[in-house]
Length: 206
Image (cartoon, rainbow, N blue to C red; front, side):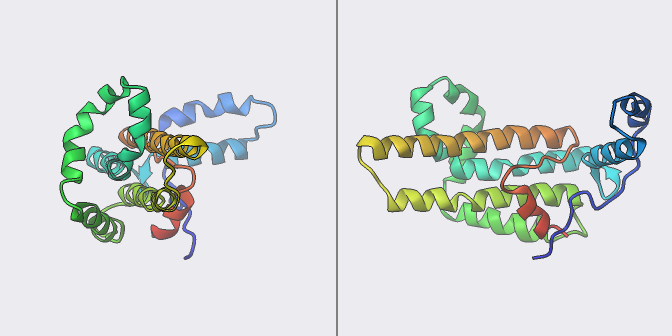
């Protein structure tokens, strides 16, 4: 797969960024060229095909991160048992969780719909939406590995169970942080870059 840089497009920096150029130029070791590259790359984070992402695209991009979270929310069973207060945070997602798990076909249908109808449809969706959708898909695909580990190693107690609890809790917290960070960044018009998945997502988004 050929790599496609996320900041392929060169949008015009906003007036606000221009006002801060002279302040950045005063920083020792920061040349005007470096300043310009930094500001242009910063501006590109909030753009789609050279234009600012519109409100609908921001909402669509933010909503995509629900997909891997709903698919992996069961990894939080140990965390939610130990910290019941977290259950209050998840209350707004309960209807979506029940709907997502109402049929074993729903995860697969969502996967193919998001990939073929959104990611592989540049004529209808801009790069902003397609990149965030692809990040959510890659994050969901990575959930295969913890699922396989649970199937292979299914400890009933001792140090094995403690390691499983720690591993599952780490996966859940990563999904939760990805949901909060990804959705918030999208709603602000910025492009979130999730560790482990951003580079893979770029390779699939033309």
